[in-house]
Amino acid sequence: MNKNARNTGVVASFAILLLTLVFIILASIFPAGEYNSAKQFLAAFRPALLMPVIPSFLLVLANILFFVSLFYHAEESSKPFAMAGLLFGALYAVCCGITYFTQLTVVPQNIHLGRFTSLAVFSMHIRGSFAYSLDNLGYAFLSVSFLFFSGIFNLKSFQGYIKAAFIVYGIAGLLGTIGYITGNALLESFVFISAFPYLIAVLLMLIRFLRGRKNGKLE
Image (cartoon, rainbow, N blue to C red; front, side, top):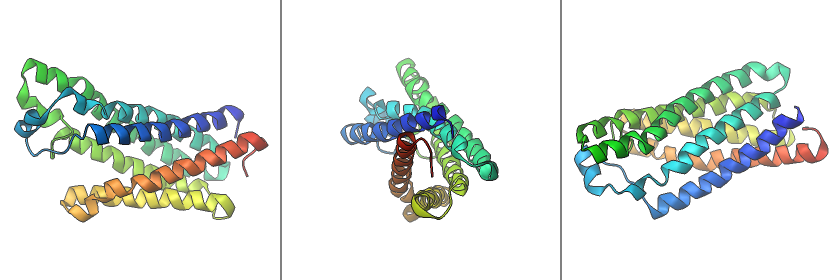
């Protein structure tokens, strides 16, 4: 793994952890909630509700760098897993990037212009909307991406912990998607539970990248 890719991994991992913390803080201060109709959403809407969307959009960009660093981290023998992980990671970036950009542009503009009927399609906070579905699809792709990327690690030493964290996140994320599709509240809760193995996986990779930068290699 070359120096530039390793440094990219350090920056991306740190950015993901920082932006996730910012998102949690903003989401706690400005909870958006979920609504069953555009009417409910309009009654509760205020511009501050969009604040958590900003770090979410930036997280998409940070994840792209993270995927690239993982691809270059992979040995030649595991490059097919890395390529598949990168492909599904790119699909996640497209789905969620479009969703979050729409929340910051189309949604407030339509509210300002009084085009309320379009909110039922474009607001991700309205259950069953196109944006809500696209966001869930994006995270399903992210889960599959992590499952493929888990294939670039072996089971020995520190790599085994990273591999386990990637697999646990991938499975938990897919369970959350299944919960959304089936309307199962228990499974849908895995959308939030999966955040923990995701952050653990990123943190472990940050440690690995830092070790590699210090030692000049990744073992």
